[in-house]
Image (cartoon, rainbow, N blue to C red):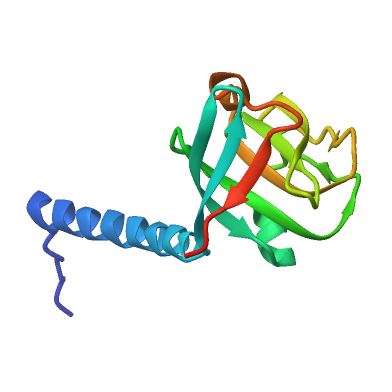
Length: 162
């Protein structure tokens, strides 16, 4: 019976395999982000005391989209956000479970008027954030956006058609 020795793969091959593995893992994550970004996007404008402020928003109008929201995202552009559309006007409650970005939540009624602004929601918190007045939509923007762009209750919201 002979003794068999196995040749060890050299470092270049191991490095190439490692790089391939990293690309595959990154590609899997990229597909997940692409699927989420496949959501409908619209331009939303808010008429404030300082003028119209425009944002590119993702529309969350199905229950799965509303439940996922901005969970697991690590960043959001300065003029990007997510608009949650609900079926009826009521006191809306939100939370920050699995959400890594601090957010401002702008609550909007069925007349498309801002009725409340919740500022600087704490990332990953399970605390419930409720609108102070009945609302039908919630716009989530980066924390500080409401102050930076002068968004206040009474401001009018418009969504541009495609």
